[in-house]
Image 1 (cartoon, helix red, strand yellow):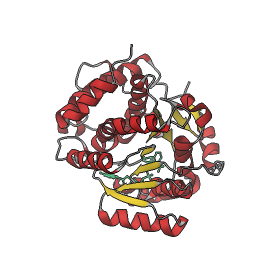
Image 2 (image 1 turned 135 degrees about the vertical axis):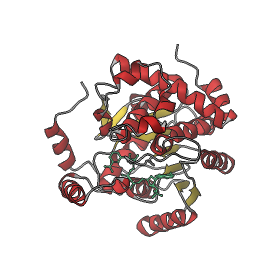
Image 3 (image 1 turned 90 degrees about the horizontal axis):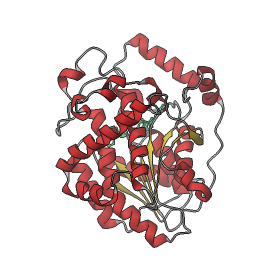
Image 4 (image 1 turned 180 degrees about the vertical axis):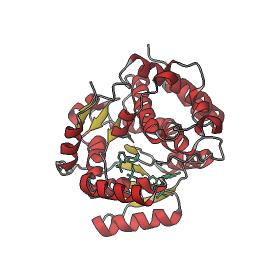
Length: 349
Ligand SMILES: NC(=O)c1ccc[n+]([C@@H]2O[C@H](COP(=O)([O-])OP(=O)(O)OC[C@H]3O[C@@H](n4cnc5c(N)ncnc54)[C@H](OP(=O)(O)O)[C@@H]3O)[C@@H](O)[C@H]2O)c1
């Protein structure tokens, strides 16, 4: 089954991944969400070297957008980067971002949902959700669905022999760490439960929150792929491996724990550039057999089985339940979201 031996984890971490293969992205538009630092920034640089028609970097502020575009220009010489602001913890910002992309971009060929927050602290957003649930999962679904019509139009304009538009969601191997069997079997509304301050303040409830959000990424991509049926879009989730980035910045570690974390990551973590390679691979490679990626979890540049829980009966039950609950919640946020789901994403037969 999906779990790999720890030794394999370490050997994969230490074994350098193949260099990014150059692809020609001329005429195509690439969007990287969460592009100002870490894996998103390194992935954006790789895309820039492939000379897309337009590279959109989505960051939280105008300054971050401008700094990112400049860093990409200096590193690669590429000058067609546009910065769009978005705060994924605010639904109205996601709606504005999606609307602007649709208004200004005729094509959306590659969309990488890379942004995420890892925290064990309960923060309730203005929309009433636990922050990491909203940033890592709810906004991912909201944005992906809102961009679907433009991606479908892109596929149509490109013709049947061109690579299909791809939606890549950056997940994580840490999704193996959670086995929420009781949640899968319960009749509670999980979207509400995972944001409920009472539930989240129970001991341990937030400890594995980040891996849970990454499991939900795997579920989202699988369900989306199934519902897209024969629509000409490829979606996959990808594990970049354990990498040295700023992801742990919100974890409140004691001095001792921080020192241990620093030592561990110095010994084991990939560089951000190395971690960006599987993300770029997920977005551009395998155009001759792209359907083999559709709906799958990719790791170390190949399709890998998801966690034991994710592939269990309970895992699939939870996936369907969460899809329905998230659709219900997000339909309150955007009538257009609901229209697109009804039109393009019917339940699988
Ligand atoms: N690093 C690892 O070991 C590792 C392992 C497995 C998977 N991953 C995944 O890889 C992806 C990239 O993570 P990373 O390691 O590069 O972490 P990172 O350096 O912390 O980058 C996270 C990105 O997400 C953005 N972001 C966070 N909250 C946001 C919000 N509310 N609105 C808009 N953007 C927001 C950040 O922007 P700001 O700078 O403005 O906060 C930043 O651009 C994530 O999906 C993560 O789960 C990482």
